[in-house]
Image (cartoon, rainbow, N blue to C red; front, side, top):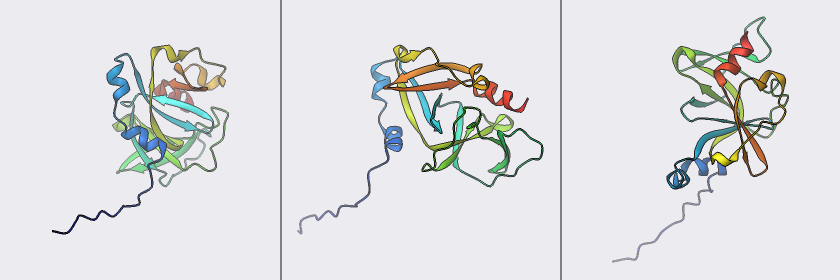
Length: 172
């Protein structure tokens, strides 16, 4: 019987963002008080959201602009036959999108309450401990009222917002 010969597949390693999503949830099992969030960036702003809040991640679809709408509302997009408003929060956070990152759409909510935001790159899984929560540093005026929590991971501050309140503020 011939010996088994294994050819290496030569697949590149997963990017850190995807590797973190596929990693086992050991940190959560070890610490039941762990705060697990989905982290993403808009420019240099680091944002976090509970996994249950974000319902879909998709590549940038065709955007259909609407006349006389606020600058943060890019327009409407068709996601699986459902019309969803698409917001760009970069101006609100006083930052600009990172030129080397692929822009994606992260959808919050479900059904008629869904809205999308433009993010830079892929989201990643974040695990915070209650001790990681800090007071929010100075933020742009339009974003301050919607901050739920701020977490420190390394030297980076991650901001968790009430996204329904934040998006509602943009259209009113």
